[in-house]
Each structure stands twice: as C-alpha cells, then as structure tokens.
Image 1 (cartoon, rainbow, N blue to C red):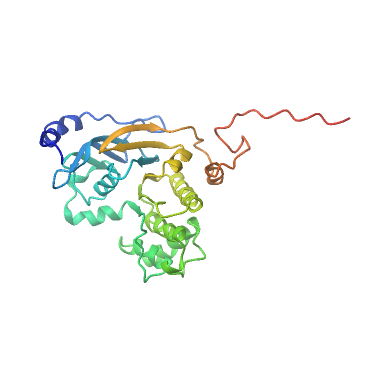
Image 2 (image 1 turned 90 degrees about the vertical axis):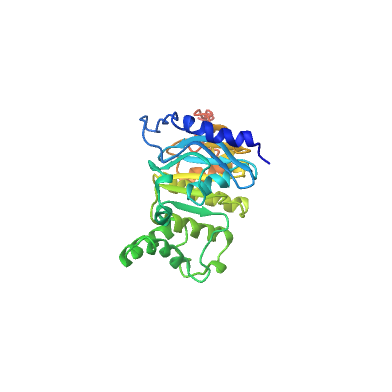
Length: 296
C-alpha cells in the first residue's frame, strides 16, 4: 500500500520539476526536440500502488535505448503511457514535440497508428496471411492499393520474410511471427518504434536475429525504445540503458563502446561473440600481431 503523504507529494512537486527538464544534446552535436520526453512523470494506480515515481528522461532522434528493470519496476507502465493506454497521475509526456495530454480521445487511434509498437505476444491476425497482416497496418492509415503493393514486399524483404508472404501465423515459428510483428510496426516508417519484451518468448539465437533486425531499422533513422528484462542481451548490445526500480529511474547511461557505422553483419557477429578480426570488432585493439618472417 502506498504512503498517502507520498501520493500527495506527487501532486505538489511534479509541476515544479517538470518545468526544469533540460534538452539533451543530439548525437550530431546540436540541441533539438527529443523524440520522446518524460518530465516528472508519476503513475499511481487505483488502490494506491505506485508504478512510476517522478520519472524524467528524454530520448533523442535516432537513439537506440533499453528500458530495463525487474518485473513490477515500471517498464510496462512507461510503454502503456506512451501509447495513451494510461494517463499519468502527475508530470508530462511529449512525443515528437507534442504533449500527449493535448491529444483528444478521438485522436488517440490516429496517434497510435503513427508510432510503431511491437509486443511480446505478437498480436497478429490469425486468419490473415503474412502479407495481409502487414498490409493491414497501411490500410488503417489510409494507404492506397499502390502504396501497399510497393511497401509490403520491401518490408518483407527487409525483415527476412519474402518467402513467407502467403503463410498464416500458425505456420510460422515464434521468431518469424515476431518478424511479422516488427514488419507491421515499421511498414509506415514511424519516427518511433516501441518494443515491449520483443524477445521474451524466444530462444537466444532467435533473439539475436530479432535484435539484429531492430538494429537495422534503427540505422534507417527510426528511434527505438526496447523494454526488456534480458540483461545479458542488453550488455552485448552496448547501447544506452535506462534502469527502473520500484518506479524510479536508478540508472541512465551510455553502456559500453560501439562503432556508429557498425554493419548489421558485424553487429550480429559481435552479439554472438564470434568476432576475432579487429577490423570487425570496434572494441578490439587496433594493432595486429607481426607476421612471421618468410624463409628466404
């Protein structure tokens, strides 16, 4: 049960903290509007359970960020707030510079169609083929038949599903179903892709393939936020990590070294720990052993 004094503090202090959140420098060196921003956000559920406690962070355009924490730490609450399934008890949330509180209920479905969301349980339409599942995301946003014909085959090639377009979800492996979910979320090329435990039901090797795909998508310029409890995967990725504990942000750091121009093949090899060539591993020393002298 939450402390009533603590809940009262949310309402009293949040507006003052929200007004002082600085903007983060973008990777290019300038200061711009973050793709998403939490300013002193708290969420108290009915019954008094505190899910978020004064969460403040910003994610810039083109970033790949992990949101980590144990079950009940607040990760899912952050995702549900971002898709307007929930509203904060205090503080403010902005996506692409727009305050989510200003989006009326009738416009929430349109807002959701303009961000990509990937779920752990895929949420595919069971009676539609791979092609139709992906095409549906374009249909609900008013895409023409020509746009569907042009975009769907391209996204299926990007996600490695070009040979599966006529299959139904129950004819696919778990990894393939997740790829369909990602293809559907990305077919409109949204500026923001939210992934809630995208590898939670997958084996380690399949998980690497899914993260490789998300990395490829991120390289196109889409900002990616992944909520996960898979700390081993996060450590291998070497990207920025925001950690939650009991609703509070306890860590926000750029985790490890990586090359910004790392190819998806190099990325996958590093994830598998298979990189031995310094030219492929951005964290390896840049010196090579001296070759033995040839006999004369």
